[in-house]
Image 1 (cartoon, rainbow, N blue to C red):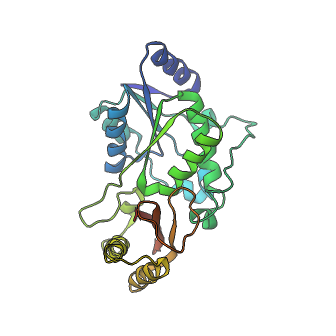
Image 2: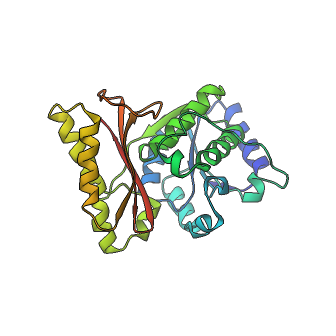
Length: 280
């Protein structure tokens, strides 16, 4: 396994893979790797000859210096996990390497990024698209693997890839869940035992939505109201949004289309922000 820290070396190594006729899968991460990331890597290994894992805490994706300062960093553990999964390359650039002095060019997707998380985090997706575009240009992968838990991020990236003709296949891996149903996420470690119990209401709301659809309910208002009620019963949960949207455009829908409608939830559990979703 190679650890690479500079753009120049990463571009050189990626070019060597291409010259050898090997397909490349890129797994972009912010580090603090967990079981969800492991699932992305395992899927990437099935889709390409070479797997590159990017570990980069992208400052453009955070709303303030305080938020990024609190983000956990576990580089040694990340490297051990990648080595155990037989990753070929771990790309770990510094902020200065990715955004050198004088950097002033950004990529902005202006439709899919606007609803849901785009309302409460208006600069987040500009950071995601800019950072992802840079990684795609550096690594030139054939496949980009992201997770379903970040459904809007996946949709935004896919729209960017299509609009700008990056020529990479965007593959979305299923959400990995804890035994209690909570989606695996870096922020889960910040939950106290009591908050963890409260957070289970998120998965319960998703399960209830699936049950209602199975019973023939097609009104999104009814499903949203039921889920909001379930979440509202938990004292430490503050709802950011409970929404039914088109799974591609992220636009709100009034009537459910099976297999195309995304039921998405974002909440604060005390001071921990969690998101989750399911395609109905």
